[in-house]
Amino acid sequence: MNLVVLCPHFEPDIAPTGTVITRIAHELIDRGHRLHIVTALPWYQRHAIEPGWEGRLVRTERTEWGVISRVNPFPTEKSNIPARAVAFGGFTALATAVGLATSIHPDGVLAMSPPLTLGPAGAVVGMGRRVPLVFNIQDVFPDVAVELGLLTGKRAIGAAQWLERQSYRRSDAVTVLSEDLADNVRNKITRGLQGVKAARQAEKVRVIPNFVDTAHIVPSERENSYRAEHGLSGRPVVMYAGNVGLSQSLDLVIAAARAFLETRPEVMFVINGGGAARPGLEEQGANLPNLRFVDMAPIERLPEVLAAADLHVVPLRTGLARSSVPSKMYSILAAGRPIVASVDEGTEVARTVEQAGAGIAVPPDDPVAFIAALERLLDDPAARITMGESARRFVVDWASPAAVAAAYEELFGELIDR
Image 1 (cartoon, rainbow, N blue to C red):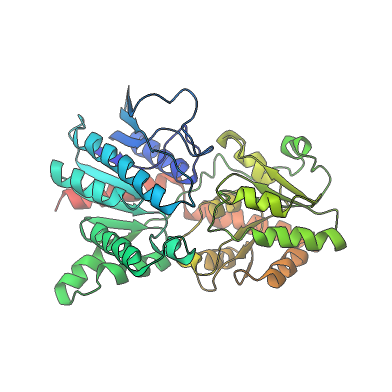
Image 2 (image 1 turned 120 degrees about the horizontal axis):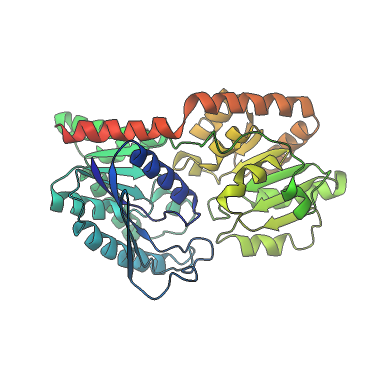
């Protein structure tokens, strides 16, 4: 089977979605499939094209398993929504043209969102080459942008919602990460439809979770070189590791560090990663000696980074846990560390933490509940060990890379045979 894959990031870019699609791609390659990856030039870490990759709108390389085409993403700040929309438009136009011109004679197209614009791009490539499109949704947009107040105005929101709905309807299948997101997408894809038409659209929505590499990320000793490098040795560590963006309630981490400075100054808080929200957070936490900001480490060091924490936090702003399932959660489970999740009650993140016996879920944007949960786990080392072991068992049984790739292979086989 030959597939065109339209995605915003791919190795060596280190974005979380890039890590996800890179591993899925290699699992499909290992199963004998050929791919044409159409993605952006590496730009995620600095929000600028990485040195050595500049100077061309499109760079193409041939591999033993297919082709990788990298196009200019026209990088902009995440907080500047109009500029990002223009940038996504330029990136999408280039990606669409490259996808249509692919030389691999595709049997199907796999497109990833965000950005939402890759849905229409995938539809154009799919129709142009007369092959089915699978649209993979990592975060439901424009819901996240609306919740964050980044997308405002009835016309703008209405236009984005229309584009979202059309993207789903023009896909042959839409994959999401959880039943929460499946319900969200089904409600939108069937809006205004009845009977058989509504049923056919609803059937398009499938749940395929993101994988976690349980062979690469394994439980290991907390006292390691990462701790030594950042002055954390011998101290309890509470860590956030991931995108430091506008969706995360990382002001909770600042509030907790400030509160603990008075009562438990030995506890260190670490925000490991980069993103649009980091400068403001660094300004808020400038006078907190128990708070460290650390740049995102290479993927090879991820097991070490995760192991360095006594517990991890997954904070999402109110309403966003219904539109997003952070891939970092799965990595934490694989590392065998407990989680304090600050998320909406009853959402996939909260359910997973509770079902796995992997930590505590508290309401979003509630510093009192968040701090109390941290204190409870820091006071109970035995519970942390038990939760970490339970987390590891849960994720090993649930989401391997091979299982996820097999699910996509089966889905494409079903669509191709229609």
